[in-house]
Length: 380
Image (cartoon, rainbow, N blue to C red; front, side, top):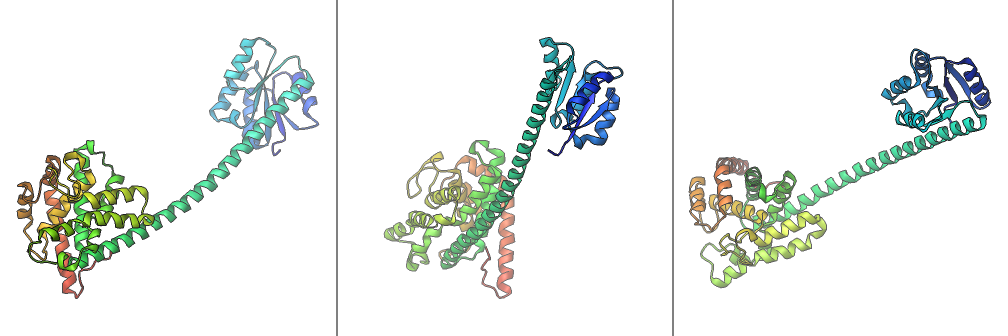
């Protein structure tokens, strides 16, 4: 053991002498005739002391007072303090233990008993100290490993996100849309979701949940990769059969999401699947593919649906020119683009100016990119 000293605190010289004889062969014995002297010894030799034998009845500062002072500095948690007393009552022992003593030594001294109790206390504290050190070391190792794994997970998530965004961007380009469409969709979803979180706590939205929904919203039209060009790029009205094929992009998108399962964690996968399948559902039940009605439609799908409709209205499409943001706002509020919940429309009201600012900003970025000779493709 590293600590090889015993500190005996007793105002009676003969008691110190008896205890010195008991421990001199195994420890360096330090002595103090009162509490204040003991504090001086502990201050200079704390790291060397294996145990403190403390008499209760002393002048200037009795044993209880000294133990109280030591407790302020947490000494009894690292060095066992054994109280010395001539009072053999259970009340006296109880008070010693309640004051923080590791054990009690009774006068007159029995050398075998005293040595055994001190040795037991020292070994117990040493074992506890070793265990705490090992636990601390192991915790440090585990924490380091956890941080490494967390960084690896973050890098993997970032890589997977880039892969998925790239796939989604390819789909948008096939649909003759620039990557700014996805940027706006994600931006609109985030703006609307933050508004809903502040105003409608019943949706259970949190910053983490909003981040997942925002990222997953990029997957909403991934199923369009399966729709033939003749239908996807048709400038005129679709026939009933063509529209049925177009509508299938929701369920086909779900199949693709399942294929990408290895690139997504469980929560992201579930939200992506839900958005792909249900972003064309309508609050009045007139949407597709499942005809969901009201709050049967998840908040993730409702947010993405409103964002997608708004962006479709303010953007040029093969079948129409862009409407102004104010006109798009009126069309959505009037139900010309399908029915949304009153809560979603209230969020739309609150977030309107922020969304219009995003439209202006991204269109300016897109025009600048085109003027510079780019194609409008974004690095997602």
